[in-house]
Length: 232
Image (cartoon, rainbow, N blue to C red):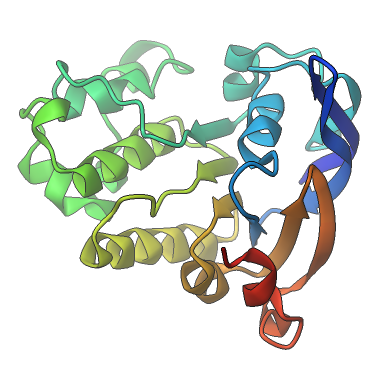
């Protein structure tokens, strides 16, 4: 389980994250919703060690990881798909995926797990094409595949539907459901697309001005008026 306790972060004199506390359990999809500029991406960077938390505690599987560097968090089983995908455009699909195996050594680091191509059959067909030649939706699938290659127990996704055509959004949603159904992974999904989040989430969090202002079970999202809280 991921546990975040009283997390604070500042940019200059601006208080960006304000005492955030929440859990993301193994076997469930926790969806964090909020409008642009409320601090969602800053939170994820703190979780991955890309930004140091000013105060507060981040625990993964009971271990305090505030002092872990990003690569140590990956070694601990945490994978991050950033907003904007950030694939390597001049490398092939397969080479991009192999980069996700950096936490392993020997034979395990030389071949992508077959499950990756079962989850994303379009990538199997394009494994020798350069990442930059893929469509935006295919690049998003590649970014998720690269993260999954390290066989994480915590998968963090930052707005995976952004700029993606509806057919690929549906395919990505199906993959996330498949991963959650295995029951061995915590998934933290940051999303602005309410319908996508409502369909996938087990738990929801609503963030505004650096704080969690509402939380609950996904089955109550409509009754709790979550759509109105996050719609621009």
